[in-house]
Length: 276
Length: 364
Image 1 (cartoon, each protein chain N blue to C red):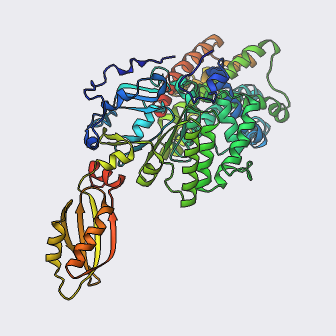
Image 2: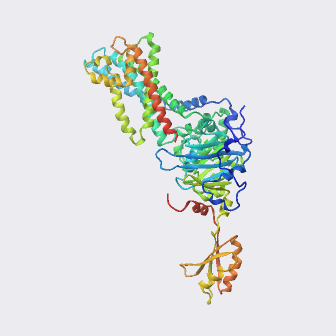
Image 3: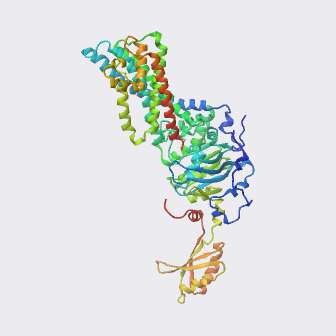
């Protein structure tokens, strides 16, 4: 067992009590803290994640279809896209704003940065936790969709890749939030979120199938630059294959590559903020 | 774990094995002669060797090669004007700032090579409130302990004991936002103690505290020291530094200017001992003549007549040695001049004088 001649004479240090305690356990303890806090405010959290997609589904999926402005098949296009939107957006919002607040106003993150785990692991925990919230938000879409639309496109055979794509989308959003939360100065975060969120929401192919943008070429190019497009298209291909979509394997590859790039940039931003 | 007595590599060679008795106050940038006093590696709680920090785009080093050691179980005061390098040093020691060069060890662990290992062994009480606002007081303590791997049963017992000890037991479920500055500060100390750190860093802990809260804090620090915890404290408060610290380091412009016990530092100040006398003059008393007479007394460096807005006669006498021993001969000399000594105030130099002497009076 590790002995510490440097510790106070008669008092055991944490290290002596738990020689096998590692950064993993510390990371899990921090995750438990986040789950504890969210768990206590779960109804508020649920309302937060349900409200926007609920209205989107209702207006675009139900009202417009019933009024005849959208074709009946539009639900097939819309639903997978809104699941992607819920995953990416909730992930982003669950990291960006909390990070800005914790780094500048509340300094709450310090106690975690001083916990015995690598600094980058604190960022990873933030992303993982945000992705967990985002997955809940995406999962909630299914019962809400059934309730509002009556039925949703779904194939049991593709359940596993759907889950995987949702998780990827959640992580992608959280990684985007990590970048925003660490690079944007606190006094600009409000305007930045507005400037980023609106284009992100409307260029992510969640309300339209990307291949059908052939005749609006510039918008197709813009949409192709938004990583969320690949989550929307991937889910569309898996849940409603009859709708034109980007090939699923391409969606997975681009999503994974985007995630890696965003994480590398985000982690660099986090380390810059956390270490002087 | 990185623990090596080879930390002495690169330390400027100590020529004099022991410190000169009084002249210790102005060893600009070089207090390496402090190092050989600690021979036993286990007796060192913090070791800093030639620490340099230059921030990107900064024109000068924030730390320009600082070396010192903190002994195990001592209270070490870190003094310096704003921007002197205190916070940078503490930041490096607590793994939050990466040094440009040099070595820093906390409880034998290199904070650069093994920050995770170092974090287990150190506790930090920051200057500003960084408590978890989403958690109650008690849960702030419990979760902190869980980050550090303190087993559940132990952390619950410890949290209750610390809440009691720090006068927070009546509202364990309250959120940090509902408490006063003094209570917040006590919570942060209690939190830092949850993982039984070997070295506790307190950054300007008494800033903004009322006198009672400050005394409470001082008591707690004394208790921690008695319990074997090494305490490193930064402060602007000279009283605090002098009262609490076993040794004091004075830092400015990134250099260590002095390091010793407060009493040795104060003793090193010469020509600053004064005796202020108020005299009721007799009909024949002449101020200038009396001052001249006082100036001839043995041990008196100089005697000045002070302006007295009350119209009385006052002298300031600069002396060498124990000020109190001058009261009797001065009183005698004054009555010899036909006057009567009615009040005498002894001016001993204190740590503040040492600080001002070393760092100057300019505002930062």
